[in-house]
Every structure is written in C-alpha cells, then in structure tokens.
Length: 164
Image (tube, rainbow, N blue to C red; front, top):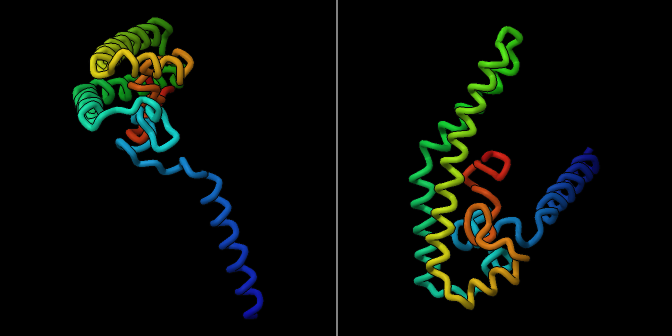
C-alpha cells in the first residue's frame, strides 16, 4: 500500500513540475506590471530601449491613466458584446435589432481605438529619436503596438487583443 502512495506522489510531482516548466522563464515576468503591459520582463518588449527610470515611470503613469480613463468604456463594451451575443442567440430577434446593436458596439470600439492612439502618441513623446528607431527595428515596424511599446492588448487586466 505504501508503495502505491509513493508511486502516486512521484507521478503527481512530475506532472506538477512539467506544467511549471512549460511556462518557461518568461511565464511570470513582473517588470513594469507584468505580462501584457507593454514592457515585459528581461526578454520582453522594451528591453533594448534602455529607458531611464524617469521614462519608465512616465510610461507607467500613461498606461495607468489610460486604464483608469477607459475603465467605464471597456465595461460598456463588455455589456454590449454580451447583449449582442444574446440577440444572436434569440430566434425572435430581427436583423435590424442585431445590426443596430452592432453599430453601438462599433461606435464604442472606435472610441477606445481613438483613446489608444492618443496613449501611443503620449508614449511616443517620452522616447528619444534613437529609442524610436530602436523600437522600429527591434519589433519589425510594429511601433508602439496596440497598447503601448509592442504590448499585446490589455494582458493581465482581462481584456486581451480579441476583446477590443
């Protein structure tokens, strides 16, 4: 019986270790707010920019301001998406109602995209010409990305690139 417990314990530990190593060294980077916040860890976006502490602080402030300023808008987008999904699932709803809701959603998305563009412009003002050149070269012309400095959406905030 003890042998069975030991065997199960070994299998459990191997399974646990496998999942931990599957994430790799970048799985939990925390520099500048963690995954999806534009900077990333030692191998994430922003590595070669050599940002000064002041630049990094300003970037963080801009991202936090963006997050706070768009919180209500993102929640409204979430609600409209849910409403649209509900309308699609209801066989009694006509096409005009669905299209009207889609237009509402599109309008909100455009507002968010405009705010994202403004955020990128603000971040761009912080970088030196050399840093902008490095950013363009390093990330294949992606520039500041959808959420700043090559980021991938809103990451750890639960609002990813498909959620726009």
